[in-house]
Image (cartoon, rainbow, N blue to C red; front, side):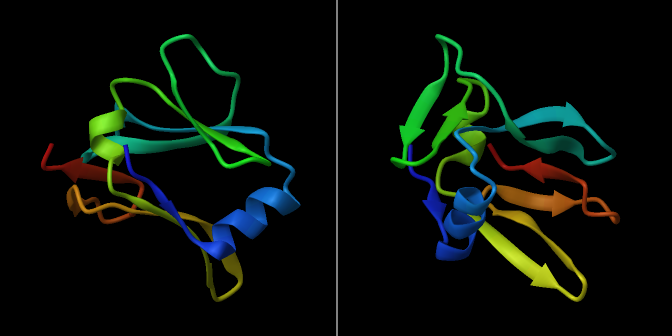
Length: 103
């Protein structure tokens, strides 16, 4: 499982003092899937990627969808947010909340 994380995203996770962050996908939205990004506790089925000061928790269903993605923290005008940059995305809805994958 390969996930890249930018320096900007690392800095924000450290500022927010995030310990265990769940990354994943769930069914929903008009394009079919939505990303999951939330503080959580690990389960026995999770893949845990340890970065020292924080860990990513990824359930087994989400792993193929997230393999090879990059997590960034971007600033757009007055807004800033964590952004999934995923090579498996083939489409997203007009509002940008949901996506489709080629997996």
